[in-house]
Amino acid sequence: MAIQKLITHLNSYLPLNSAEVEAVTERVTVRKIKRRQFILQQGDWCRHYNFIVSGCFKMYSVDTMGKEHNIQFGAENNWLTDLASLHSIKPADFNKPYAGKPSKLYIEAIEESEIIQIELKDLVFLYENHPKFNIIFRVIVENNFVELQNRVLQNISSTSEERYLAFLEHYPNLSNRLPNTQIASYLGITPEFLSTIRKNISTKQS
Image 1 (tube, rainbow, N blue to C red):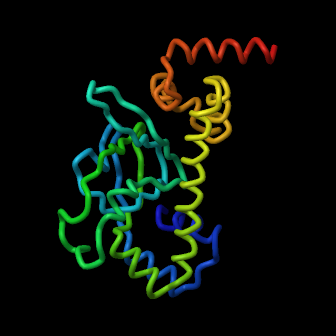
Image 2 (image 1 turned 90 degrees about the vertical axis):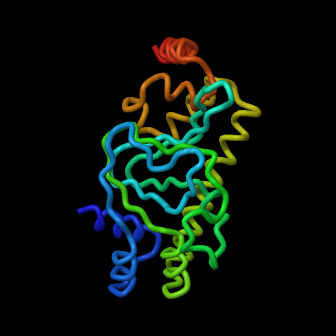
């Protein structure tokens, strides 16, 4: 059951009591997502945190030439959202559909997926009435920040091969689920160069 997977995930940070489980269960929505379906597009107003129950997503931007640049992947037990758009909404505007800053990103399903969504206003309710959620989501956001910070450092100081090895370490279960084009976009290289890197690594290991 999708909700139980979410509760198990949250319990891995801090155990929830029955009142906390009931509170979060009442404020989330379970959705089935088709392959290549968007849960966020550029120009949308981001309203949700998205917990991935099953499946796989990519979060990316598109430059002025129409080229995609993958920023982040998400699979089972990961959270994906556009924090810049989501947290630009002021509490007084939670019920306004077009408040805050429109997103500059896309979040698209790579596989048929199931997600659980929670709106920011409901998350703030949990923060205020059940402080344990404030701690849990602070750790989740901090972990995502560390991940993105490490990516920036890798792009500055690491070789393409080192970035690929870091990708394998960070996403150990995705290398066989993602097309080469998606991985190459994430690394900022061509699919052909990715194939060369893989051959070099294989040669070193043989």
